[in-house]
Amino acid sequence: MPILLPRRARLLGLALCLTALPSLAATAPRPFDARYHLEVSGWPDVDIQHRLAHETGHWQSEMRASLPGASGHEWGRFRLDADRIHSLHYAAGYSLLGIRRSYSLDDAALAPLPDRQSALVALARRVIDDADGQGRLRYRDHRGREKRLDYRVLDRDPVTLPAGHFEAVHVALTEPDEDDRRMEMTFDARRPGLLLGMDYYRDGERKSRLSLTRFGDD
Image 1 (cartoon, rainbow, N blue to C red):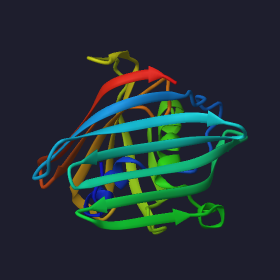
Image 2 (image 1 turned 30 degrees about the horizontal axis):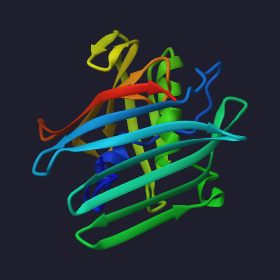
Image 3 (image 1 turned 135 degrees about the horizontal axis):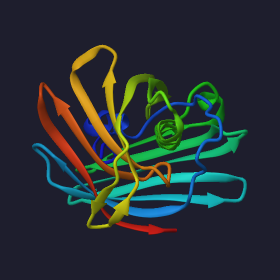
C-alpha cells in the first residue's frame, strides 16, 4: 500500500481513509490481525501487515510493509465517544533506497477530521450500518491535507476467500474532481476496518489489487 512509497501514499491514502460522521448504533470495532497481498502495476508485489488493537482507553490501527530497498509503516490512534471516532494521534514513516521520511499529526490537527488509519475504521462502520449506503467522506492525509471521497455501497453479499468465509460490504469510491479514478473496496461486515479486498482503477484500467491472505482475531 502507499504505506510503502511516498509516491503511492495517495493510492493507499485513498484506500485507508475516511469519515468522522457519527452513526447511530454503529457496529463496534473488534481487534484483529491480518495480512494482505498488494499488486501494483510497475512495482514489485508486497505483503502488508494490518493490526487493530484495543488498548487502555483507545484503539490503534497499524499497517507495516517492506521489500528490498523500501519499507513503510503508519498507525492511527483513536477513541470512541458516543459512537463517534475521535482521532488522537497519527504517525507514519517511509524509507526508499536510503531516503527516509516521517510524518506526525497530533490531536489538535485531527480534531476536525480523522487521519486515514482511524478513518478507515470510521468508513467501514458507516457503510456497514448506513441504510442509504452513500455519502461524502473527508479525512486528513499523511501530510495533514484535507481529502474528500464520495462512496456508494454496491452490494452486501458474503464472500469466500482462502482466509475464510466473511459477511461483506462492497463499496465504490471516487474523488469528486477525478472522474478517471475509481476504487472498489470490500469490507468485513463484522469487523470494521478489516479489508477483504481492494481494486484501484485509472482510465478504465486496473492499476492495483489488494487481497486478504491471512486473518486472525487478535
